Length: 473
Image (tube, rainbow, N blue to C red; front, side):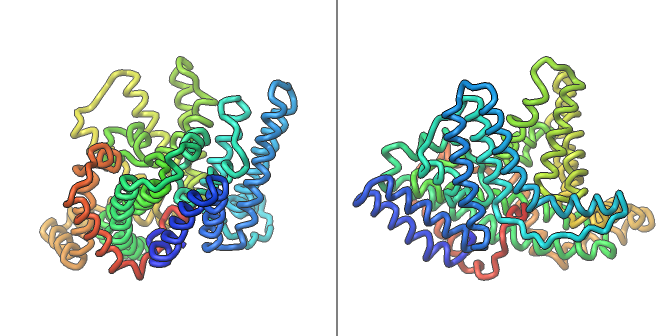
């Protein structure tokens, strides 16, 4: 079940919302939380019920590890063994489902063996909820996270708005909210904000992202025969599509969280306005970036360690980030490319060298487009075909008038997609982002009209909506 579906909007959400607050009023907070966990598990099972026992078992296993960690706090050996067990279990499951076949393929290639690949389906959301749980386990081991009941922990892991694709939430941040008195009653102002955010997210996904995804995928698949303008059009389409698809999901998740009086963390801060790659990664998929920074980068680099250690920590972090996104070498190379560009940005900052903002921004966005090809492609072969077409300037050298004519021909044949790309660019470069919108938000009539119009148009086109792109991770 996805947020942008008739079943979710008109059946699941109204029922869960009504039952949750009715139970809060009639039976109290604990039964209401139990209902919320049950609803979240149903939401998850609707995608593939076969993976429900895995999620439920992960919740139970890690809860008991957490209890044992707190019970053995102060001892020398037991907490280390429990932490190792938790890391082994969580990362072991992630490795099996996400990386086993990648590992076998590379073993076969290097050693000339012929081990059979497994028929493995990746459980939806496992990359996200595994990191969310691991962060809490590590914080508990360090004595930096508070206790919670089993029911509270289950809500923390399974809360359906953020279960599948985040945002990744810190345990204590969530506990502070789900224990608050205000979470137990309907808050009209939160519902109004939630409807606004959900409508904006729906529009991003349905009206902008999906058409651009379809356009980009078509040209990627035939890129060997594509033109210069088709290549750049496809790359631009994918670049904006990924942003509107993912940030649209996050906006919907934030809106749904507000329905239940839970403010989830924002995950985007106008990433395409970044002045360098270090700035870009402070703005894109913020909660995942924070996880990598806190639990990998900071384990390697300490302030004052020097440039070589900074470079090593950055490269390790981004290579792991690339692998987290996908078990394929093109994701590894994408991570390496981003790591190199972040290193260059950090070194320039350390040397106090700064380009004028317009030049810095234009260069950063250009490099985002170039590196995005590695992320979007199905493999290195397709990525190289895209690069070959993008940077083939022979048509321009052989006849500039014909070259421009082919550009106009591309726009004429793909006018709708071109308008969407320009619209997406204007929104990304000039419009306020979700955080800025919420900061300045005051309920007004035109907000209601705007949200209603976006929602109505999105509903009209909702029948053919595809899954969110980040579901594959």
